[in-house]
Image 1 (cartoon, helix red, strand yellow):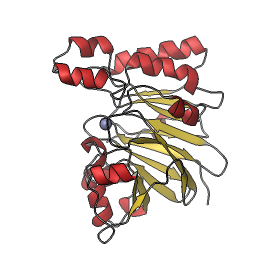
Image 2 (image 1 turned 90 degrees about the vertical axis):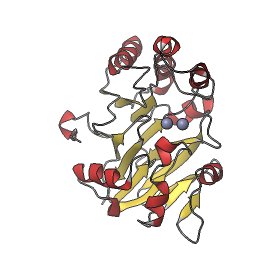
Image 3 (image 1 turned 180 degrees about the horizontal axis):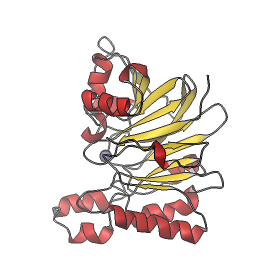
Image 4 (image 1 turned 30 degrees about the vertical axis):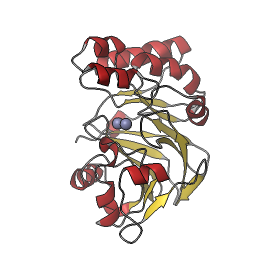
Length: 272
Ligand SMILES: [Zn+2]
Ligand SMILES: [Zn+2]
């Protein structure tokens, strides 16, 4: 039975990234930045379980994205997808131990009712990507975090998605004047670091389309950002565009669910 394509952000930010994407009977995970136990707990709070997961799609090897990837593959027998560079850098287990699948370059992978496309991202991982998920009716969810700038390739792939998850990592002023060491500030601000509120808000001009129903602000820095600052940046950008969309701003411990077909329904929000 085919159902609406939907996503639940189970956790977002440097403490761990993980989202569940579902369409009908197909359930996938995007990144594995929580422990196996915590992933299962948060899935159950949303009415799903790890046993239903048909695949895990990894963006890159940084620990907030791959923490339980090997465990999910070896202990739970779940296929884990990654680029060749990420699989190697994350030291994912070899083929005798686990079902690790290498993403075809520029290609798409179909798992059950969901079509997954990996798009390369400008970040300081070895071969980092973001993902766009589509259903049979062409409805799309695009999620991109951990990128220094919005490249043409990312914009082209994610523009007009019904649901957009976009990194709003830091407020540039808070980061500049904050406690981080100089090398780390340079890394975050670089072309392959993380996206600022201002850069992400500017990107909405190209990303929000006529079919876009919701925008979720992801991967907020606890030190260098606040939900209020990110929310204001998005609200201003959307006002400029003349659109009103439901927003989800930086809720790392409060799963938020978005579907590609219904108006946002806050009653779907699941307490962690
Ligand atoms: Zn990250
Ligand atoms: Zn990263």
